[in-house]
Structure formats: C-alpha cells, structure tokens
Image (tube, rainbow, N blue to C red; front, side, top):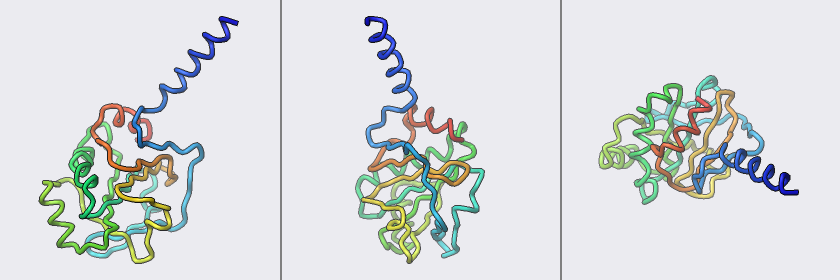
Amino acid sequence: MRFLVIFIFFISHAIADDFPKIKNLIINKELKTYENITFLDANEKIINLSELRGKLVLLNFWATWCAPCKEEMPSLDGLKLTPELSNIEIFPINIGKDSFKKSDRFFKDLDIKNLNIYFDNPKTLAKDLSLRGVPTTILFNKEGEEFARVIGSIDFLDKEFIEWIKNYN
C-alpha cells in the first residue's frame, strides 16, 4: 500500500511538472482547428493564419482602453526578441475598433518597437474564437492548431513561460 501511495505521488508530480504554473494559462486537452482565420494589417491587407504553417503563432487580442493590455504589451514586445523563439510570429490584434492613429499612439507611449499593429476584421475574429475579454492570447502550433490560451495578462518574459513555449518552437 505504501508503495502505491509513493508511486502515485511521483507520477502526479511528474505529470504536473510538464505544465507551467501560470495561473491564467489554459492548455487544450485536444487541439482546436478553425477554418479561415483572418485579420488585417495596418494597411488593411488580409493575413490568413493558414499562410503561417510551419511557424509558432501567437495572436494577442487587445484594445487601447484595456489597462491589463497596457501592462503586458512591453513583455510581449520583448518576447519577439527572445533568441530561443526565433520561429515565433506574434500578432497583436486590436479588437477595440480603434483607429490606426490611436493604436499607434498606444504603441509609442509604451515604447513598443518590435511588433506591428493588426486589427480584427469586420467579420469579428474575436467572436469566431470565442473571446471572453481582453487581453486574451491564443497560441497555434506549426500545423495551425490552437494548443493553448492565456486569459488575462501575463509576463511573456517569465522564464517558466519561455521554457514551456520553446517546446512548440
């Protein structure tokens, strides 16, 4: 009996250690696929997620009025420069219906230098992906499948987060 208890203890800790201890990170038990995920760049050019196969993709949904978005954006900007994540594509997507000028001011005020501004398209990608609020970050593997979400803000430069996400790079 004692052996069984010890065995269960070690197995549960081994399994638990595979997942980072980031409170608002939700790792999907089953990968999710979506049809025709598109959003717009600052010139209103359509970006299609299917064109990014082979890359680790991070879609970060934000708005200029969102205080937690403002808090996490500098670390997201820094994540783009993380050498271990050379295969990551980061798309901060404004879903607040803000103008480019207002969005650009938001980036300049926060000294965001490594990211471009993207916008939700008129068909509301945020609705298609069942967002419950901002910020929300959705992570897609190299096959274009959603494998995790971050609901709320996090420090994207957290060592534990970077160590975990490197497994998908």
